Image (tube, rainbow, N blue to C red; front, top):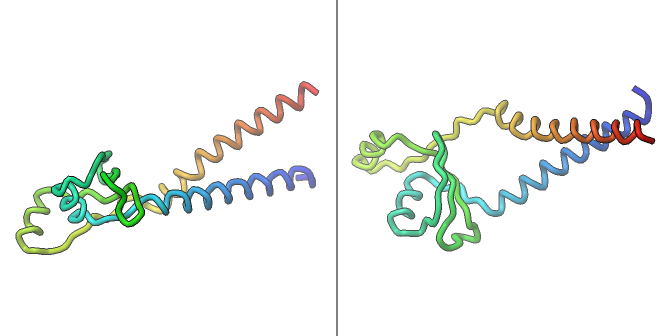
Length: 129
């Protein structure tokens, strides 16, 4: 690789790192990680405005900001198990199933797509000059 390509690769890696860090700080300030029991209590009190339910996670918005946060995330728990835990008075919280590999790929693959598009466009513009 010649010097010119090495500099471009360094810039790309720097841009990717900046995007990741900015996104982490941006979302960390908005989203509260709450337990499933807190979610059920807030839901019963009418403090939940909207939710998005997936197979293992519930994301949503509070009706009013809570401790400066407007959104929340919690892990889903099997309802049959909840009845048993509630009867025993045990505090519970779901655990995420996302592995480190899937987390890294969810960040890395979209960025690589943007980099590929960028290289494609730069190459096409270079051919026209």
